[in-house]
Image (cartoon, rainbow, N blue to C red; front, side):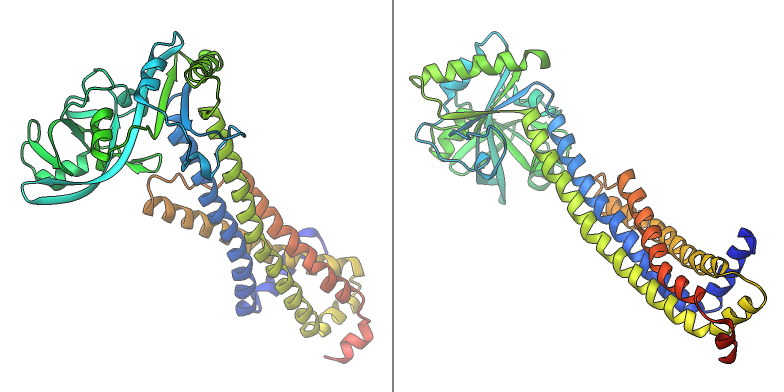
Amino acid sequence: MSPIDTVRFAARAATAWPLRTALMMLAMSIGVAAVVVLTALGDGARRYVVDEFSALGASLLIVLPGRTETGGVNPGSFVSSTPRELTRDDAAALLRLSLVQRVAPLAVGNSEIAVGGRLREAMVVGTSADFLELRGLKIGQGSFLPREDFGRASAVAVIGDALRAELFAGQAVLGRMIRVGDTRLRVIGVLAPSGRGLGMTTDELLIVPVATAQAMFDTSGLFRIFVEARGREALPAAQRQLEDLLRARRDGELDFTVITQDALLGTFDRILGALTLGVAGIAAISLAVAGILVMNVMLVAVTQRTAEIGLLKALGARAATIRSAFLAEAALLSLAGALTGFVLGHAGAWGVRLAFPQLPAWPPDWAVIAALATALGTGILSGVLPARRAARLDPVQALSKR
């Protein structure tokens, strides 16, 4: 038989048993779709985190209280304890460094906001005027925090757009007084809507001067200090300047950690990249299971078509031709299942993007190619044993079972 005849023979054999063919295609398509969807989720999470940190700029330094020897990111990077806190004076000293452009100290806590009988729990961020530029935020109404000394506890606040909608319900906002815990503050600005970023919903933030936040929460230490160097090329020198200054202020003790944006991005990229590979491997197991199903069904097909195989051999078909026919059938079934899984996987990824617009859940090309290749490979390899069994049948004995 010519290659075209072999393919036609395999196609007719596959369509002769529609339920069996559909089940094999379903098994293969589920495996491919699982790989596509899971890798889309994993890679989407990786790109989301990288984009969030990239939005802060390429010249960011983050100073943490306490010492993390690796200089990377671990659970202790976000919840740390130290005998010596970072202070407003530390932040003010950093602002005087020649290679530092902006400094934003952070004091963070939760408090209840009251406006005209309406109550709302919100995250309060105490910071400085530079926080707006460092975080890439925009003002929708009014103005941001005044540029003043870090130690001045001005009774002003900037609220997120979601807080404005919930607390003021379409009323004028600027100049209104709100009560935050036991402190009365005047609203001077409203942030433009921006959604989630770095684990917090900026539309639901209440931003106040850092000294005001410290007075609210009765603390003298800072949660973090954001520092922006004068350009990406100045980042290493700025980090050395920063470390030398803070070490000198601590009598030579290195009880703080400086994390660069590159270290954050590199760590998250490696973690989430490994996670993507892991979930792809787990999903690929289903492709092996589908391959075993193809083998089982093809072995049954050899038994069912014994007489047909005997007739082909009696008419002069060689063993190689019989093997090719069965391998072509396995390849067609695997290809159909892989393409169906490809379509289902992209539909699932589209559904994820629709449900979570902030997550760029696009399957990586390598995962799609690997899934399709694995599906075809397992399907064809699983067809080898049935094809060899069919090719070894004796034509006389095969015809006697007609």
